[in-house]
Image (cartoon, rainbow, N blue to C red; front, side, top):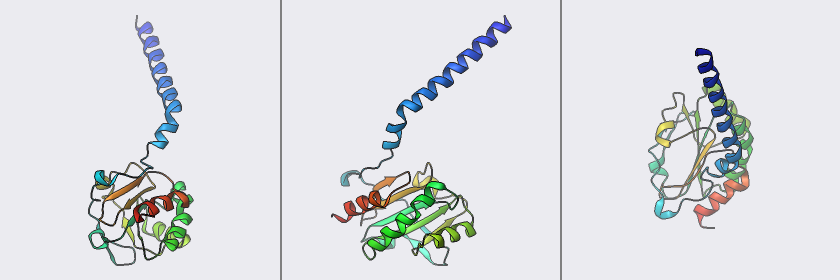
Length: 180
């Protein structure tokens, strides 16, 4: 009797695992598309969480003081492969939108030396917040990295992109909030 129960439990567990795997495989494209890679309608935008933090260079980032122009907030880690893949795209976009858009980086789940090395490697010359204890993860609702928020000039979340971005994708979001 016990042998029969074990066999039933093993078969049931195997069927459950195979079902979950099949579902994930069949829906993986829709899960990737469901990463909010489209603008959030102005009427549905909410204010970004407060961000008043020290930077790696000794300054302070205060989102409330950045109102009046769009802001890009990129959460990254120096060891994260998708973060590395988008590092150059962010540097190029920051140069292309210089004076019109403020960029802010937030190093999470990382070391100070790793974050400094990463920002030097990709030529990031904007404020970088170091969050070694990941206390910004919950208020921003992060589920992974990289995650990028594009705020409109009123400090509301206009885009939330929870994956690696290309320069074209970032430009699309920035052109949208700039009304171009």
